[in-house]
Image (cartoon, rainbow, N blue to C red; front, side):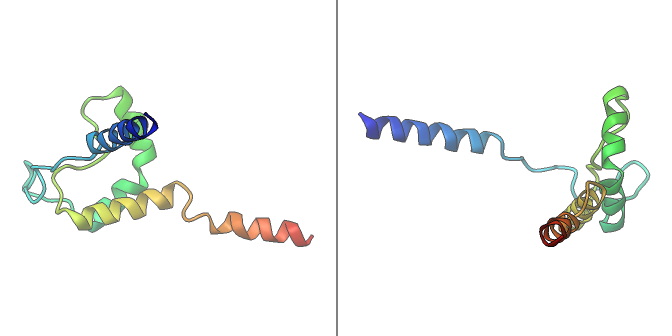
Length: 104
């Protein structure tokens, strides 16, 4: 009985994770209406301004947080670097403060 419950629980967890997996973006590699495709540098900028863009997108249907007409992995990398920079970086400063407090 325990084995059946464990297998059922594992199946639910696996199905939940699979259901949350992102699908393909059919617009990757395609240009927008201006004939441009977002690359690394635009992804970096979009990631950096993402917190502000998110708040604005809650009130406007014409603003998106993520540019769907991008060149794929390079845009994603720029977006993630910009997002981590705008949300506080790697947390290295907090680790230094913690060490300093311990020795004070």
